[in-house]
Image (cartoon, rainbow, N blue to C red; front, side):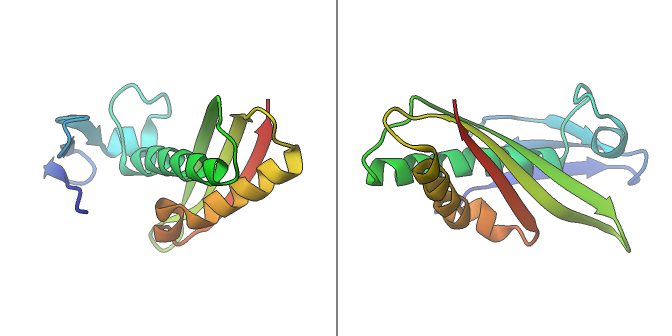
Length: 142
């Protein structure tokens, strides 16, 4: 399987602007810039690569967990994961960690089994495996 996304950038790193598009058309010409990446925490002016990685990680993890739950005999009513990516400036910018905050509604499962299955999903999620940073998680049944 191959998936493509395209980034176009014009101008300097500090003052330039870019846009992102995906093969699927999920977004086309989505704007990003230095401001949307490093200065704008409200998310209103555009996206940034780290936000997209966090979204991809949350989505991939939920899908992996869904498969793990079905294999264990459960079907989730809802899995809601918030992925918080932390990037810090060292010699250059480095993604230091991702924290997955999971809220699950899964009929019939106990807390300990839910957390064990969630841990396996975190370890087996393809996006988890591509990131070379600490990935932590909390998992709670609602």
